[in-house]
Length: 466
Image (cartoon, rainbow, N blue to C red; front, side, top):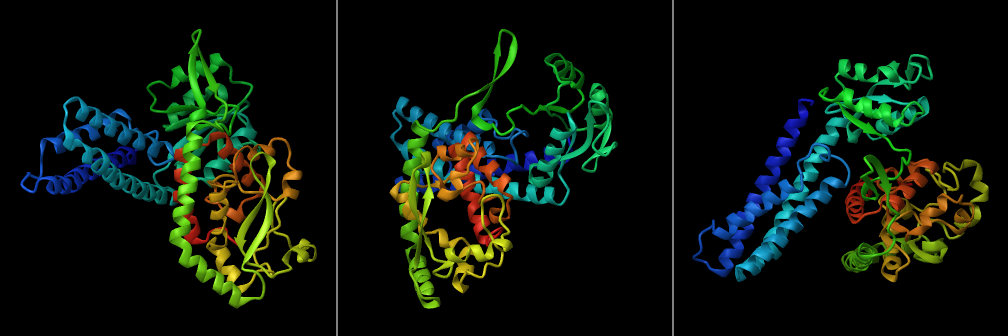
């Protein structure tokens, strides 16, 4: 285990415990004072609430190193811990007929969660910054065929915040694409000698990528040989883009089987998502009404023409709808595309230009901070769009979709999505499609929450917008 790992886990643990303590003492003290001004600051209810919250955090393994600092699982476990604590306190109140427990369940616990979640996010940002600077990285030994290893190296370099650094490689014949290395990473041996190289090199992770060499027996023997080495064995399944709650490992007839459940496009979670979309859109439209009025006036003063721009887009199950945006281009912009075709900087089926002459002065500012997208909240409120989802394509784009790409039409398009928080217009077409398909395959409420949180940062920095 790297030296920084226990320090980071200890920091997270102390942050959580002190946040819980602060929430129970301050918010709980305020609630108690409102009910009975003569009550002491620390009451039996406060002690029980603190204990239940800490135990719930422990039971849900929120301090497991495997989930700290990456993905939605860290916040998903925190959410489960606070919900479980609320349920335990509520049931305890009913069992012992404690009527004063209600404000603790409905006020103190949620308020404490509002302290813990932001602190976790702040700590994660410190960790991600360190990783982008080349610190707090886990040395990884990758093993498989050249193509899958190259893909793994590319992905880890493009996502340094995840903390993986491919330090060495083993291949079937001990050779890489450049004989001794793959994308600058040295090839240190053959797959049959992987365990010995992993032990000598002190690698934190041994990442096994698909290769014909790997049989169930060889993988089992590799796992045995790595025991006690301090290296964690990670096996990349053939289904590279399927992850999260859809993957389950079951033991059937003594064999470990990777079970892949079907993507969930209906059910209670979808109802919750639809309700959240509509309520969220209504609240945002109310709060942003002054901004939208000011933007409308700026567009009307800047250039002649309508304030809003309407365009046909393709939504869930291929149904077309009319998207609404603030107009950011000259009125006849669509007629000028043919003249600018040779200057297209977009990827795949998209037309994009960093310095598009069709964009107005006000439009450039609106695009940089995605303000032009705000009227799409009306589309979310009306139903054809969601707050989070794949990018809504043009009809001519979707008409040329390959069968696998059409899977992005299985869910509602979104005002934001993985593409929005991962580079926006800077993304290659293939990467944008991959992210949309990943969202469709691995959708969850926790993933939506993470995307919405990251969207604010992407919008405020203006990254990848033009």
